[in-house]
Amino acid sequence: MDDSRKTAGRRDGRTPREAPIAEGLARLIGQQIANGVYRAGDKLPSLREVAQLHRYAKNTVVVAFEILVAQGLVEPRRGSGFYVVDRHEARKPVDEESGQLSRAMDIVWLMREQLKTQPDAVAVGDGFPPVQWLADMRMDRYHQKVVRTGLGSLFRYGSRYGYAPLRESLVRKLGDIGVNASTAQLVLTHGANEAMDLVIRYFVAPGAAVLVDDPGYYPLFGKLKLAGARMLGVPRLPDGPDLAVLERLLARDRPRLFFTQSLAHNPTGSDISPAKAYRVLQLCQAHGAMVVENDPLADFKPTSAVRLAALDQLAGTLYIGSFSKSFSAALRVGFIACDTALASDLADLKALVHVSSSEYCERMVDVMLRDGHYERHLFRLRRRLEAATAQALQVLDDLGADVFARPASSLYLWPTFPGIEDTVGLARELMPEKILLAPGRIFSVDADKVSARSRCNVGALADERFGTALRARLR
Image (cartoon, rainbow, N blue to C red; front, side, top):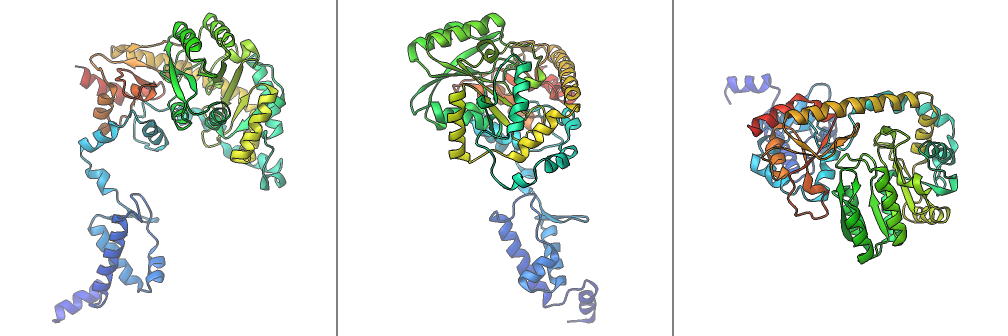
């Protein structure tokens, strides 16, 4: 080796022996990345941890990481460490995205998309209100109160019914919307989805007929398919279910349950009319079917709004509520209100399947409900939703869209756009621009049915990027 090469080796701190070792280590880590041991976005172990694991000098590990950076496999982040680069995502051609979007009729597809966090995306199809609407109910403000109210019990499972003080709070809350219930009629659950799961486990045998809104709540469809149920769609009209179809299916198939959303219907945003609400109850009672009313946006609607459970006082209805939309989806607190005997059975089933729900989260919700700030929070939520709905309707009108229902306030709207016959194709075109739609066929009982509609979140429609992208395609 000449003097210049020796000097170069000393200058970069690399000895002749270190170089092949570092290259071998880089190959090893690169292979682990290729095999999925480390995935895109994962943080690699620190330089010190890798050195200790392989018993290499730190300089050798530094060189190996430099090789990985040069290969584009990892990237350094100042003060944080080295992270795996998503090279596949960065170079993914549009047709691969299309392949993913073509699975939009798959229920799990949208569920996966809903759980992703993409701060720079326009989530037009999002199922949740904008985060800033919920910021004034930050959980960190209430944590100490929760711990002080029952530190000892937080180390054990709670009651099969759920945290008693929260059920007392819910009795008052239900009374505000006209539902008279006792604590013995309430079962707390791990969100509204667990509530639906318990109801399905209790009532639905394989092959049993079950009525659902069509279009309707897509996770419910997935749960019913898992249970082997025979789903029968009741078309949703702007003022509620199609009564003629409902009556025909009740008489022909004798279903045990009818799952529906009376208010702020997902995905159409429509509200049931009082006359139709009474008729739905009459028909279901005459044919021996129980109505399962899901009301996830109760806090966004006036207490005077028509609810099926309030009309029949839980005689032939089962009411499901949640705090995911008005407090935080992370809390995962929901509840079932029903007949006392049924509540006891469902509490037993819950204990068998899930042991208990989270008393910590239930205590958190109870503290938030009892706090004087809660009523002000609801007032602001409703005002924001009204303003956002009006603005969203104007955006859609300017685009020439046909909107299924035009409520005064709803988190969702259900439009069609001029010249668009299948919104899966529209969603495919917009995805590379980070505009994420929820194609209508996801919400259909018939997963192969082409739909010209999309579920649109009124909070997201305020982003000008959506209007700009649509106008470019509607010219």
